[in-house]
Structures are given as C-alpha cells and as structure tokens.
Image 1 (cartoon, each protein chain N blue to C red):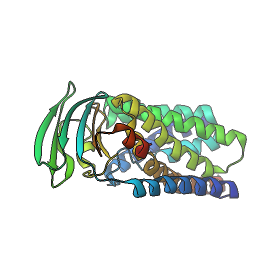
Image 2 (image 1 turned 30 degrees about the horizontal axis):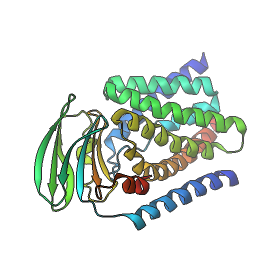
Image 3 (image 1 turned 90 degrees about the vertical axis):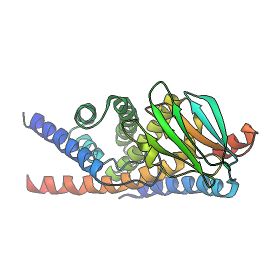
Amino acid sequence: MKKTAYMGLAVAAALILSYIEMLIPFYFGIPGMKLGLPNLLVVMILYLYGWKEALAVNVLRIVLNAFLFGNMYGLFYSLAGAFCSFFIMAFCKKIKVLSMTGVSIAGGVFHNVGQCIVAAFVVNTVQIFYYLPFLVVAGAVTGLLLGTAAKEVIKKMKRET
Amino acid sequence: MKKNDWLLFGSVIVIACIILSGYRMFTTKGTYVEVVRDGVVTERYRLSEDIEVAIETAYGINVLRIQDGYASVIEADCPDKLCVKQKEIMNAGESLICLPHRLVIRVIGSEKETEIDAVAG
C-alpha cells in the first residue's frame, strides 16, 4: 500500500515538474531541446522500486501531461523519447557499469536520440539529424544534473525514514 | 559520480564536439531555401531575395520570411510554435522544423545534394 501511495506521489511530482519546465524559458534555438525535469522522478523510482514501477510512472506522467497541458501530437513524440531513454536506463542499471548519475546521463542522451528519430520519420527528412550533436550534449548535461539531484534526494529520503 | 559515469559523459561530449567542429569547418553559406512537405521538396527560394510566403500544408500554415540572407518562420498556427522560436538560419544543412505540420524548411548550399548530405551526416 505504501508503495502505491509513493508512486502516486511520484506521478504528481513529475506532473508538477513538467509544468515548471514549461514555465522556464530554456531555449537556444535548437529544435527539441528540453530540460527533462520529470525524468528526475523516473530515475528515482527506477532505483527505489524497479523498472516496472518506473515505466508505469513514466507512461502515466506523459499521458496525463499531454491531456493536461499539451496536445495529442506531442504525446507520441514524447512517448518515443521516453521509451527510448527508459529502456537504455533500465539496461544500464541492470549491467551495473554505471552509477545513478551515469544511468541518468545515458537516459538524457537517448531521450534526444529517440525524439530525433521519430521527428525524422514524422517529417520524412533525415536532415534533422544535423541537430543531433547539439541535442546529445544537452541531454548529457541535463542528465548529469538530474542524476546528481536524484541521488541527493534519495540519500535524504533514506536518512529520514 | 563514479569513474565510468565520467567516462560516459566525457566521451559523449568529446564525440559531439568533434562532429560540431566538423560542422564549423565545412559550413558553407547557403544559396537556396527548400520547403519540404512530408519529405517532398515542393518549393525552392533564393536566400538572397527577400520574400515572405505563407506555406500551406494539410495541417496548417507557416509563414516563411527570407530577409538579408536569413530564413525564419515568423508565424504559424501549430500548437507548439517551436518553429517560430527557432533561430533564423543561413548555413547549408540548417533547417527550420515544424513537426505538427510535417514541414521542414532547409538551407542548401548548391544544386549538388550529395555534397550537403556529406556535411550534414
């Protein structure tokens, strides 16, 4: 029961972070560049509970976010990025080569790779990959920051319980 | 952060920077602007001529402006307006992208497509 409550809390927190992300002007003129704040919760749940729980939180927050603030075209686009990033993170965690921060970095990078691939399919143009190096750097940096934050939050949570 | 994390982070940044410096070196000023709807090139404009055109697709309208050798989307009726927020483009390989309208407006260097693809890829 406690787990269900915590996961509900995580989805709610992820939705708030999606909203905060919309308010922050983080834009450098590169299409598809995003902070990816909600991924903080996905990384945390992945480490606190496991991949099934993290996947549930991930899908729920994206679908709810699309209904609350976004639009339906954006839904498939975000889902693609999220799935790509999620499976890489779950895999990286499983092989135990990386710590939480490293897993988050890999997730950030592959979120953008996934979105780029879907975008190329949507517009039927491979030239979009021109922007991939920019997006990969952004994904690595935000992944690093979010991974560090996730680690600190989990440390604090464990100390308090 | 462990050693492997730094290795991953470092190698990602280094590889991306190598590719980006490749862009720098091979960047050529564009001569044409191509409008690509759903993967098909439908119009071509000269970057040197100032124009303003409405591009209508089955999904909506984007207004393309070419001014002083730069191309930008100044207006659109798509839900996210990311194409409008994008920086103006002028170099071969750069593109303005409107995902909801499945529209790409790209700058190309010359008639030779292969040359551009080599730079972009």
